[in-house]
Image (cartoon, rainbow, N blue to C red; front, side):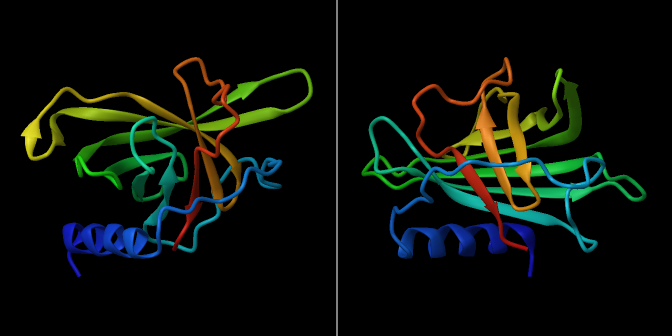
Length: 163
């Protein structure tokens, strides 16, 4: 199945399932800080992220690790509004797992750096946005801001591992 068909099918399933999202929960770091759990191949995370003017944004993040690397590769990030505006946005580029050290623990993040020409909103080219996700555990990512802080709202900006 080609990637675009898979992403479109996944978004349709998210919409069909409704605009429900996971409840907020306390997260812990993975027991293996060197890797995101993966059994080979791509990783796919999805969820419905909160939005101000719509019931949510169905989001899919595909991570395609480079051969022989557990910290970098290519990504595809797709968003579809669940509201009446129905916008669709896609970003493609490179990802890299970064680690920040604190007094008590190491935190791992995924930085998505878009390619200059591979970003669209409703089919029209647009500048890309660098995004960051905290790796909460082997199956959950939380979107952060550019300073690597969790959303102050307390709303669940979480994506769950699907594959």
